[in-house]
Length: 122
Image (cartoon, rainbow, N blue to C red; front, top):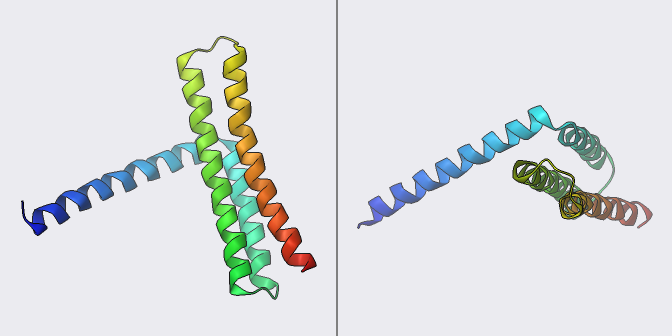
């Protein structure tokens, strides 16, 4: 197998991963209000980061943490859907799994808030 074949195979894999990722994003965007809310919160946060007199590193931190909140929300949605697929019955472990995934989103959002506070108070 030559370099060209390897490149083609890896490019094809990358292309499909990008397609599946985009499909997942769109599905979450269309069906999960919480993702939309976090996107709008990130737009406001990014706008503020751009107009304030921040360093490049501070801006990068704020923007990166906002993106991590979105990633956490996507994972939260994946956990919720997986639990719901397995069973729609009330179960303590199912509730706990969903609460843990939601907690991960909250912790990520708190990290972004802490970064904002640290940046603003210097």
